[in-house]
Image 1 (tube, rainbow, N blue to C red):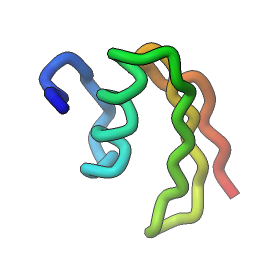
Image 2 (cartoon, rainbow, N blue to C red; image 1 turned 120 degrees about the vertical axis):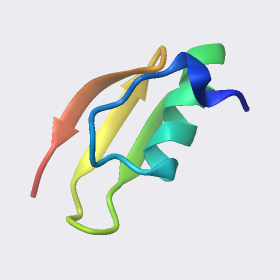
Image 3 (cartoon, one colour; image 1 turned 120 degrees about the horizontal axis):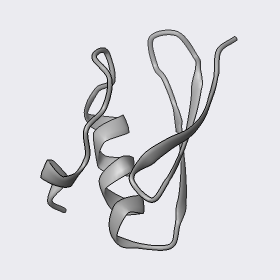
Length: 54
């Protein structure tokens, strides 16, 4: 998957980058749970749709 199409804020790792890239080329919605802080990020169309911090 080519992740060069997506731009994410600093601090988001490869898991976030991969999910953003997948949602940029499909109609899928992606959900990522951060390993470090447990926050949840929801992606659609390669963009962050919602961030939930715990």
